[in-house]
Length: 68
Image 1 (tube, rainbow, N blue to C red):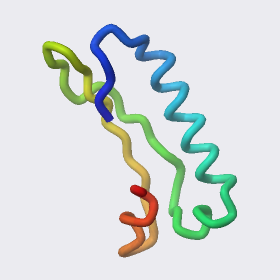
Image 2 (image 1 turned 90 degrees about the vertical axis):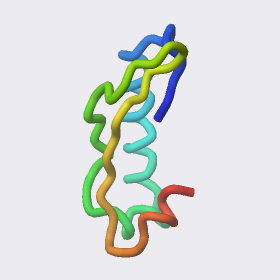
Image 3 (image 1 turned 120 degrees about the vertical axis):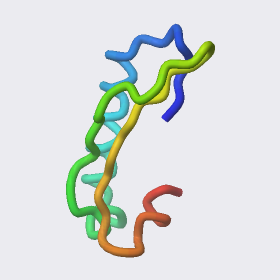
Image 4 (image 1 turned 90 degrees about the horizontal axis):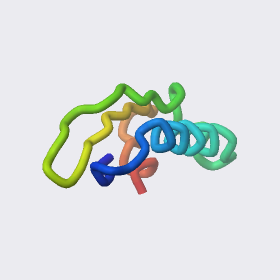
Protein backbone atom coordinates (compact mmCIF):
# COMPACT_ATOMS: atom_id res chain seq x y z
CA UNK A 1 0.00 0.00 0.00
CA UNK A 2 1.46 3.36 -1.02
CA UNK A 3 0.99 6.45 1.15
CA UNK A 4 2.35 9.96 0.91
CA UNK A 5 5.87 10.41 2.17
CA UNK A 6 4.73 12.97 4.75
CA UNK A 7 2.05 10.71 6.28
CA UNK A 8 2.34 9.57 9.87
CA UNK A 9 3.35 5.90 9.51
CA UNK A 10 2.25 5.03 13.03
CA UNK A 11 -1.24 6.28 12.18
CA UNK A 12 -1.20 4.44 8.83
CA UNK A 13 -0.24 1.13 10.43
CA UNK A 14 -2.95 1.65 13.06
CA UNK A 15 -5.54 2.19 10.33
CA UNK A 16 -4.35 -0.93 8.53
CA UNK A 17 -4.78 -2.90 11.75
CA UNK A 18 -8.34 -1.54 12.06
CA UNK A 19 -9.06 -2.65 8.49
CA UNK A 20 -7.80 -6.12 9.36
CA UNK A 21 -10.07 -6.27 12.40
CA UNK A 22 -13.02 -5.13 10.28
CA UNK A 23 -12.36 -7.92 7.78
CA UNK A 24 -12.17 -10.46 10.62
CA UNK A 25 -15.54 -9.34 11.99
CA UNK A 26 -17.29 -9.30 8.58
CA UNK A 27 -19.47 -12.43 8.32
CA UNK A 28 -18.98 -12.61 4.54
CA UNK A 29 -15.19 -12.20 4.62
CA UNK A 30 -14.31 -14.20 7.74
CA UNK A 31 -14.73 -17.65 6.11
CA UNK A 32 -12.28 -16.62 3.37
CA UNK A 33 -9.48 -15.67 5.79
CA UNK A 34 -6.81 -17.98 7.20
CA UNK A 35 -5.23 -15.39 9.47
CA UNK A 36 -5.09 -11.76 10.44
CA UNK A 37 -3.78 -8.87 8.38
CA UNK A 38 -0.05 -8.52 9.02
CA UNK A 39 1.69 -5.18 8.59
CA UNK A 40 5.24 -6.18 7.68
CA UNK A 41 6.69 -2.67 7.54
CA UNK A 42 8.14 -0.26 5.03
CA UNK A 43 8.99 -1.89 1.71
CA UNK A 44 10.23 1.11 -0.28
CA UNK A 45 10.72 4.82 0.16
CA UNK A 46 10.29 6.94 -2.95
CA UNK A 47 10.47 10.64 -3.68
CA UNK A 48 6.76 11.16 -3.05
CA UNK A 49 5.53 7.99 -1.38
CA UNK A 50 6.28 5.20 1.06
CA UNK A 51 5.12 1.67 0.31
CA UNK A 52 3.93 -0.38 3.28
CA UNK A 53 4.06 -4.15 2.88
CA UNK A 54 1.11 -6.13 4.24
CA UNK A 55 0.06 -9.78 4.09
CA UNK A 56 -3.31 -11.45 4.50
CA UNK A 57 -3.63 -15.20 4.04
CA UNK A 58 -6.80 -16.48 2.40
CA UNK A 59 -8.26 -19.83 1.48
CA UNK A 60 -6.97 -20.99 -1.92
CA UNK A 61 -8.21 -19.00 -4.93
CA UNK A 62 -10.18 -16.51 -2.82
CA UNK A 63 -7.53 -13.77 -2.62
CA UNK A 64 -9.19 -11.84 -5.46
CA UNK A 65 -12.48 -11.61 -3.57
CA UNK A 66 -10.67 -10.14 -0.56
CA UNK A 67 -8.66 -7.72 -2.73
CA UNK A 68 -11.86 -6.05 -3.89
